[in-house]
Length: 462
Image 1 (cartoon, rainbow, N blue to C red):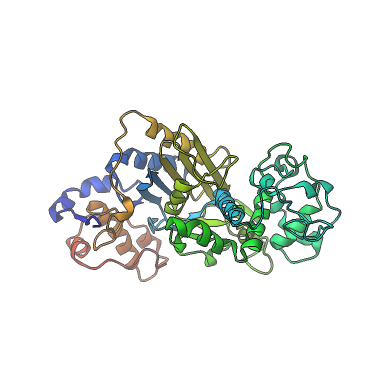
Image 2 (cartoon, one colour):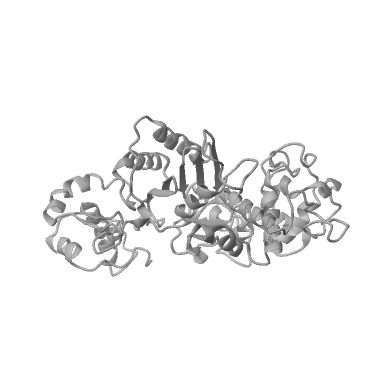
């Protein structure tokens, strides 16, 4: 049986108004409230406010049970719509372990092997990919294997040569094709550039390897990368398809559950210009790169719950990335991701704990993901942690009055209701005074509507 929603008495809500108003300066929080993890709520609040992060999500699983899943901050740039717990966000390079799992599923199905060569070069069908090089290829390419790609040992070093997957306008110009060039043309151009070390001789983090693995998955699965991920990796975990989707470049193409991605004021050349976009310069997160082309390396959009299910069954990093989760022990693995407008962490521990943190902003220096890994680990490592017994996905939320989807109807819901009420009472949606009016518990008419009336229009109706 799903736990029923708790209704806080009307008089108690009135008495709690002063406390709720004192918290109005905090970022809004939605999702099932977990008293045992109130410290995590406070950690997210403090950190996001100190860094100017406007949207974030955090989720925790222990021994296969999701015990915490909350959304913090705002869905929109104007900060009028609280982020909802059903939100999905760009996950950047946390995409890579998911691609690795798809590769290992295809290996298990006998489609190819870890030691198979990736490039055919001048011998058709001798490798997994038959792309022809733009310019003379580095002869060492013939030695690159699938395992090299998985383990960042393919020969590319972005610290020495830069990240060639982001040279989209340069590649298009060199090949006399429209920008962005797309994955296949990008691969052909990269094949004509020199490697920085002999394949297999050392490790250097590489987006190129996972660009190639994404193409290999599609070729040997015979379907789009996202479809094979759903079928082979996430459906067996019981993850609905809507919790993992292919990301898109421009806001008008985004899933309505995605928040605003904060580029921190950075503008980049629009790689789609002049075919698409408002102009030749755009906020970096909305056209500074071809997001669709990063489907295998960093282009996925996901719910934290989907990532928790992955972490519960698969290894997120290391030599066996994408393989089965190791047996319990003292080990800890994580994968992080970053793009302009995105910073992410997926962490798994040998004590049965996994957690995910997603933000809609990337720092100019340092790493939000590293800070969150430290903070969450310190919380879980302390003696006497009180572990929730609840499965947050089984709590009934969203009934009348439960506007922040935490399983309770209380004064915090009144604040969320008032936000929506203020938004819908303006005849002109651009009236700043109405959109940003202070939230108030006062007014018997509004309070009665909150308690007895229907839900206001959904937050996501923009």
